[in-house]
Image (cartoon, rainbow, N blue to C red; front, side, top):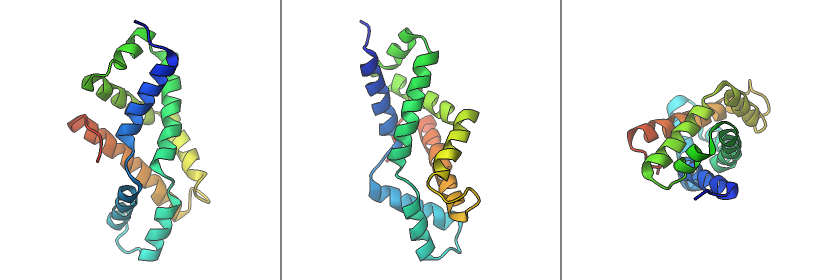
Length: 154
């Protein structure tokens, strides 16, 4: 039975967002911990400013998930996409791994930089660079977690 494109888009979007997002409190704590680890001499006020500057992960991942879905539908045969949307843990994990590969592409590296620069005054700005590094570290964490367990990051 053939799936509607709308259902395919909704399914893939839900899988990606489930793997890539978590609650705001946990996000703020993770950002604070990341900044403390990477810049131990930074003062608490600066840490709080940086945390506020980093856009919600969900906002960026939503945009990138839509871009991923568009590209997937352009390049992968429909029957293979439908198989990936069959609801099995293995296929959901495969979707997330393909998403990670898409995010690591040269095209998306440029897109990530553009999206981050929209939130930071300049790419040379130290706080903007920290925001960029955090988002890239988050992508790496998702990829590593996916490789280990195929489970969402908590």
